Every structure is written in structure tokens, then in C-alpha cells.
Image (cartoon, rainbow, N blue to C red; front, side):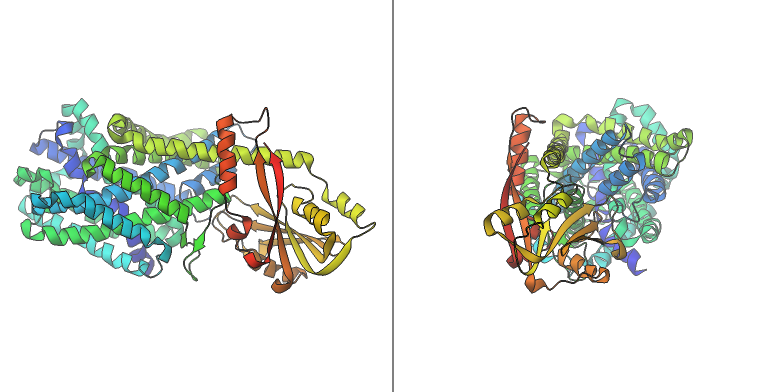
Length: 615
């Protein structure tokens, strides 16, 4: 029960705030849908069956099964799909590219969700009195700046209140829905899917356009998948079927009943469900709910960034752990302030939740489509189902996704370009970084000095050895670390004990502690230590070194020095990338934080030695 309540607060904040703007957008003037009883029943029926088919059947039933050792989200799914097809498969690169596109779209969604959610909540003030309209944008900006400014404090302190607040929110949604349904019970006919079918057939092209607004009721589907690892499948499913879906269904039915009895409420049906007296309390409650929904996407951006760094798709960044108990509670300053800047630009640039709705729909449907395609590769290659069964299992949902994506793509010019541009930018950055890393790695490998041969020749006439332990970071597949060569060249000494440390990134969420380190003696008090991390593991090198004690290798941190080679990237003639991408990679390399920061190494024990690498 505790996990279920927590899941309600964290997982369903995004989809739970969709009633704020969905019905208003469907019946906006630009869609040309007449406010008739038949159309209202058709729209409500579309929303209800969309929640049943896409959320209940696709995500809650199928996609939650496609987890990477309990972890969900687009990066976990793409890592699982890539490992399923294998590195030698012709599908490996397309699957990796799909994963990058999904991650890029997630960043776009993470920008639009805070903007449209908080803005739509504050817009409730316009319903109370039009005189407050000039204050909507300033208040929205103030709330968002305050929200992002608090990120460095972490969510440990306020996270425990998320569940109860969102539980009150869903209870309010259900109560308002029941009150309006009682006044106009004929709306219950919307459970008949024939009303949705008749709506599509009778309205034709206008109904297809309106699908782009209906999909707003489904936004937040990725959140329940991405946050599955925090709670497990059972609490997420239990929360959906017992609280979230009933509350959402009742509220959409209630808004439909309100529009049938009071057509003038179409300007903002959510805030008019209980009359003028309720507007200000609803503004306060909806603002809290949307802040919580925004918090989930902001935290998700931090988590996806950390996973992308671990999988080699993004350069190292400063990662701050905001909780002593919860490893997943992290704060990445660069991501936080860049995201806030883009969110504020979206709020000011689009100006209203109605304008932002165009951008929101395409981000959601494109992400849904990407998830479905990646799930196919898991079903086919990981679960080993035959091609026909795998196609049937995902083909139906892919048809729905493509239909919704086609509808939302009609609004590319009016705002849909925004998340697509963000996604294209992120894919470019990730592809550039991954390709650049591969070029640097291949260059290092080509010029690498074999470690065993070097040590054998070194100790024919060994240099002077000083007390203590020297730990040299060594790249995967590298030869002698450049930092060691520079140290010998300049200092002419070696520590009494030498450790070559290599970090291996695995495509699984977490590596068990018993498999974290492997120690290989190389002779002459030299050791090779391999440390293995999953993409959600905390990279704490001192903790990993402490685990070496079980292998007979103990460390005294005050007598240990870490040697890191900071690489200067030089663009070579005839490089493997376009010149502008080489320049981008070089810029990211210069701005990336050093390994001491990323791997939580004590900075007072770090010695940096420079080296140059051509690409």
C-alpha cells in the first residue's frame, strides 16, 4: 500500500493533470468540432478507450513486462533491445538510433510538461476573473523558477508528501466527475465504443485533426514505464486500476456531462465543474499537482542523462547526490539550468497552454511509437517469440500509435516543430559524442603500448619507488596509461604499489556487489583492477576499491594517489566526422568534468597529467 501511494504521487502526476486542458483543446475553435451531444459522447468515448487500449493494455500490461532487470524507461528499453539483437546484428545500429531518438523526444517532453502543466493550472485565474489574465505568465514563470531553484536540495524532504497530495487530487477529480454525472447520467453511454466510431465516421477530417488533442489525455504514459524501477510492476499496476483510471474516467465523463448541460463551459470545462466558488481552491490544488507532475519529468531528465552518460551517449557531467539514502535522487546542474531556460522560452514564446498543446501531442505520440518499435525487438529477440506472434503483439499498438502520430504531425508548423527540433539536437549531440569516442578509442588502441610488455621491460632496470599506492585510470582496451608515461617522464619515480583501474559500463541497470570488482596481479606489486557498473549504479571508486579487500588488496586512502590524464582533442585531417561535428565533439570534451568529479574520487588525492589525442 505504501509503494502504491508513492507510485500515485511520482508515476501518475503527468497523466493525472491532463484533464486540465484536454477537453478544452478538443473543442477549441481551430478543430471545428461542433458542440453536439453526439460529438461530446464520441470524444469522451475516444478518451476512455484510449486510456483502456493504450495505457491499460499496452503500457500497464505489455510494456511493463519489457523491463531491463526491473528498470524501465527509454534508455533501459533501448539497452535491452540492443543486447537482445546483439552487436553483430544488422539491427543493432537502427535500434541504437531509435533509442537515441526516444531519449531526445523524452527531453522534449520533459521541457513541455512543466510548461503546459503549470501554465494550464495558473490559467484557471482567468476563469475567476479576466482581470487576472495579465498575471498568468508572470506567475507561471515565478512558479517554474522557484521549482527549478529547489532542485539542488533534492526531493528527499518533500517526496513523501507527493503521494497524499496527488491522492487528494485524484479524489477531487473523481468527486467532481460523479457530481456532474449525477446531473446528466446520459453521458455514461460513452463507454460504448460505437460512439467513438460514429464520431470518427461522421466528422471525417475534422475528427482526425481532433485526435491530436484527444492524445493529450494519454500524455504521461512514458512516466509510468520510466519510474517502474522505483516501485516495481505490481504497485504501478495496482495504482492505475484502483485509483488513477477510475478517477480520470469519472472526470472526463463529468466534463462531458457538464458540456451537455452547460455548453458555455467549453471555454474551460475543468475549472467550471463545480461553479465559481471552486475556482480558486482548484487553482491552488491543480498548481500543486502540476508542480509534482513537473518534478517527475525534471527528475526523469536527470536520470536519463545519467544513464546516457553511463552508456557512452553523453559526455561526463557533474552529478550531485542529494540523498544519503536514495541513490536515484540526483541533481545535474547543467541539465537543470538548461532545461529551465528552454521551459521559460516555451512558456513566453507560446504564451498559452492551447498553443503548447500542439507541441505536446507530437512529443507524446512520437515517444509512444518509439517505445512500441523497441518493444517489438525485445519480444522477438529477447523473449524468442516467433515473428508472427511478435508482430501481432506489437502491430496493433503500432497502428494506433502511427494514427495518433499522423494526427499530431499536422500541427508541426503551429508548434510541433519544437520537440522535434529538441530531439534532433539531442540525437546530433549523442551521435557525435558516441562516434567521437569511438574514433578516439580506435586511435588510442592503434598507438597503445601493450601493458604487460611495458612492465616487463620497465622492471629490468626499475625506477626509484616511493611509499604509497598510485592508481592510474586506464581506458577499456587501452595499453599503458598516458598518465603513467608522463609521471615517469617528469618525476622519474613509481609508487611502491601500482594499480591500473579500468571501469566497464554494462548494459544492465545494476551490477551485484559481489561482481563489482575483479583483481588481477601483474607482478612487481602491480595490479589490474576492473570495476563494473550498470547504467543506474552509483560510480563511487573509493567504495569499489574497498571491495578489493576480499581479493587481498587493501587500500589506505591517505596514502593513495589517483592519476588522471586529461585529453586534449585535436581535429585531424581526413577525420571520421564532418568538421562541424569534430568541433562539437572537441567542445564537449573540453567542457566535460574530469573523472574525479564523475567517479566521486577524493579531489585532494588527484594528480592530472595531460595528453593529446587526434580524431
